[in-house]
Length: 81
Image 1 (cartoon, rainbow, N blue to C red):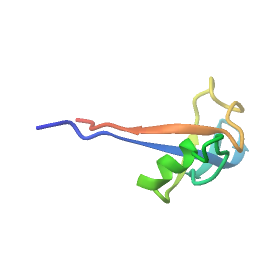
Image 2 (cartoon, one colour):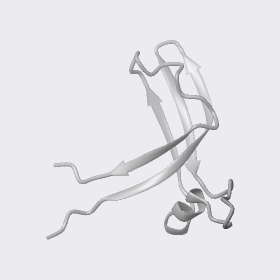
Image 3 (cartoon, rainbow, N blue to C red):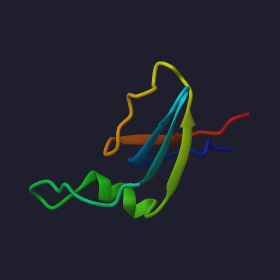
């Protein structure tokens, strides 16, 4: 049996900062920029995951204050035991 994996591309829309934690809201990417041929990696991801949202609280001190609205991240799904 093959392993199921999935990768989504998300863009942070909002960050709320609290003492000891940041709350992030991100949504699936769906827009430009396009290259000279009219292609966009964002739209390539949107073709297979056209919508999605994520709300995540981060309490890792090494990450607090480092994630900003507008940044894009890959979200990888792999099976967990």
